[in-house]
Length: 194
Image (cartoon, rainbow, N blue to C red; front, side):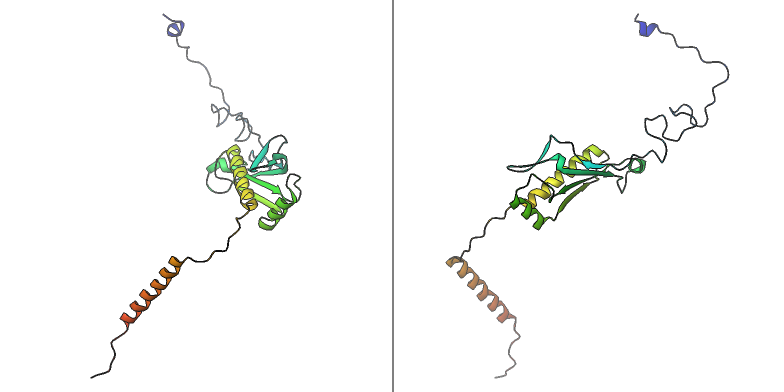
């Protein structure tokens, strides 16, 4: 017989039960707010403050071939998420806003800076509040920022002037003839009597 099977149940407590208040037995400490005992700060609804600031240096956001923007040049701001989410949305700063200052960046070349200023403006912003997790929203915001920067930096291909081929001209004229014939057939018969 193993020691786990040999264990006998502990005797029931006798005597007067302890009095802690209405929330006893739920891991909360009496006399403190509703968030006490859960590792969250008490006070004004236990909400963390808004965070804002650049990312720590060392890592980079790969935007395009030959261009990686250090995360130190991207400011991340967190705030409470709007929309559904129940109580969780009211007490966590899960909304993430990634901000890239084009004019202050030391990574961009002059041509890239001019292209971004012309197409996206002096600040490129991407917001994510889709997920409950702040870490996941941070990843989404950085991915959306990467897409916006890559789209604004993309150089459109030069358009080559071309002339329509002989076959295209013939097809266009045949379509015009068919349309004219169709309209002629829709006309009411002439009212002249013989």
